[in-house]
Each structure stands twice: as structure tokens, then as C-alpha cells.
Image (cartoon, rainbow, N blue to C red):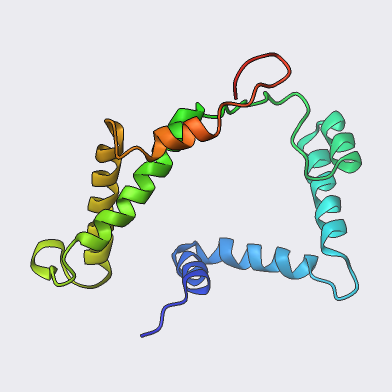
Length: 160
């Protein structure tokens, strides 16, 4: 049996959906489909319609002017970059994971299981061993990289 992830997943979801809802969604998609219409323009028009239907005229204007962009009043989420030493430690952990994975026995079905599940468990074990080995002093890869590439200072004088 051949399994293709995307079509099979979509078909499984459709099969699990309420048949009435499924037919309504299919009809809406068919109504949007036009050989001469541009997909982006169609989506922009639908966003504007949805905003006007919601009764928020400011959102409708925003949707027409800046299609598919989040509302300007939405909070901004700032993601901080990890310290450079942490990046080097994670790189060392990845290298150690690769080393450990190649050292694990090839014929270990009784320990890890057979097939894909066995290879996943084996990979997870190698990942955890690599992380634990790199947590302490490691083997020195992180230290050497940190020494070779000192932290670059940004305009505020902070490292990053």
C-alpha cells in the first residue's frame, strides 16, 4: 500500500467531516475557482468581504488596503536569539549525536524495534546522548568555535 501524506491526509479529514459541511465547503471553493481570475486578487476580495460581513469597517478598509496582513493593533512578539555559547553547544550536541548514532549497533531490532519505529527510537537515543555529552564540558568543539568567533557587538554595545 502506497501512502502519500498530503492527499491521504486531506481525504481522511474530508471523510471525517460532516457531509453537509463538506459539500458546503466544496461549493464555496468551486465558486471561487475561475480560469481567468488571479488567486491573490480573489483571496484579497474574499478577505474584504469577510471583514465587511463581520461588521468592522476599519478592518474591511485595512483588509482592502493591505491584504492578508495581520491587524496593526496586534501585539508584536519578539523572539530573542540564544546566547552565542548556546548555539555552539547545540552544534556540538548535533555533531555528537551524529557520532553516537553511527556507533550504535546496526542490528538492534530487539532493543529499538523494527522498521521506521526502531530507527526513530535509535535516533532519539542518539540525540539525547549527544545533548547530555555536550551539556558538560563536551569535547571542545563549542569552546573552539566560541574562541574563533567572538560575539559581534551591535549598535547598543550588547553582544548578540
